[in-house]
Image (cartoon, rainbow, N blue to C red; front, side, top):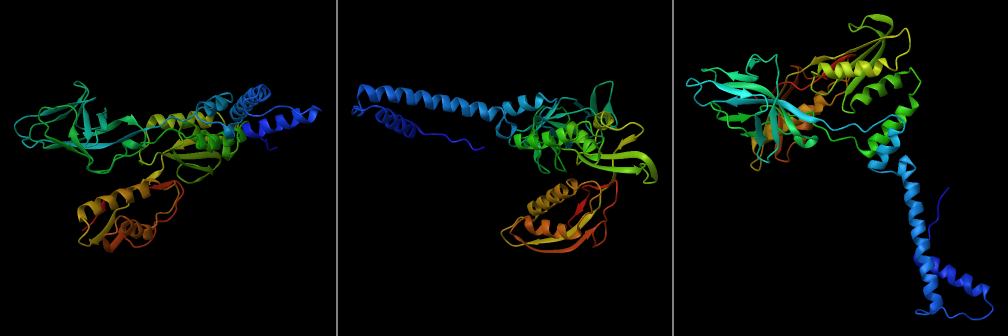
Length: 374
């Protein structure tokens, strides 16, 4: 039902008309009169009460709530807003005179972009350069460069930067002269918006007490809205028939989702699965197709800059594909021309060595690989 609100002028006019209509004698309600002042005072209070009613209505309904009111509404049902994530990636530390000394890059050392975004070096015990004893990466004498993982200190999509954006040492490191990222730093995302939380709330409510595909999919998004997933019934992870089994393929766009996320998704899905149904949560089969093309630009364009933009946009396209989606060959050409108005020609385009789409395959995720510009 629509609610009709009145302005101060309309409210006062109605009051004047009612007062005069109820009195057989002519009332003095001109501006400045005592009667007019009393009516204006009451009309002002009416306007204030009307505003309070509007505020109450907006906060008692999720569709019209914002910010903290959305959070308090969904929390009553056991749901909370998903936080943002930090961008991650790899950077390469280089020495101009590697033979003269080694270098120690400790976990927590920082690097920066020209715009002062700060990234921390993080531990990766599988990296050959990592030393558990020193809690640091070691560049041995004679080795010019080592590549290590970093994580942005700032949560959100602002931490996603293009290749080459990281160019400054935030921490002075003896034996290291330069730092750069040869590939884009990705995976940073902003916190869940009001609109996204409202949409997820509907799916959350509709999937309660239901052991359906929607319930399983909602359980995955409860872990993180940024996860890419595919849920397949009655097969095992090899694709062979297995009645009563559900395989949940999960990725975060990187092609190498963390073990901790796999465990979180399994726990969340296990809470909604029906009895006698088994669940497997695994990473998809990641394919990183090589892309090759030759790009020509006119005098207004810088070829190196255009190539870098194309490479980043191709990575964004491939990393954003859903698990089980096909990879489009013609999209690569579109991305190349859209990178800059200075692009005049794109030739020799290949995707995984061919000139056709890569097929949609259950459990397979196409992710960014090498881009060769010839």
